[in-house]
Length: 175
Image (cartoon, rainbow, N blue to C red; front, top):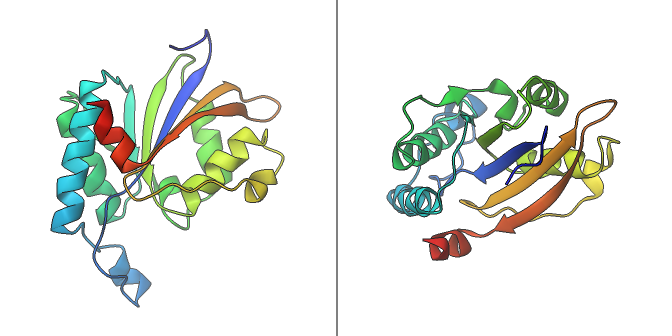
């Protein structure tokens, strides 16, 4: 349940992908494995069964993340598609992501699908009140893991709290 004016951000790490490719240009096209697809389908169904509603599903432009977001979006039966946000890529700019999130309407709920260590750094930035202390926060977001962060304000700095952090096994037990 959202408090008035609050923004709830859910951070989902993409599913299991094939082996890392040495060339960065090719690594962006690395797909989910068959097991990764199956697990993301289970996670998507569990999220849908738990009645999560998202105003936006945003994803990194990398294939493994886009595929994960698309699978979850389909399970949620959302009428709108997935939005590609370059800010969610592994080398994305956290400040640019926070500025984009600050433009959301109050009471918004968003699912951001991306990569490690970028997602945990972003979570750390939010819960350390935007004071650059994100690197001091230690969180483990497994592949297919989901975190909920409630943001109470963006000015003068982002301010929020980690509400929960779930492993893929815990998510699947929700259904």
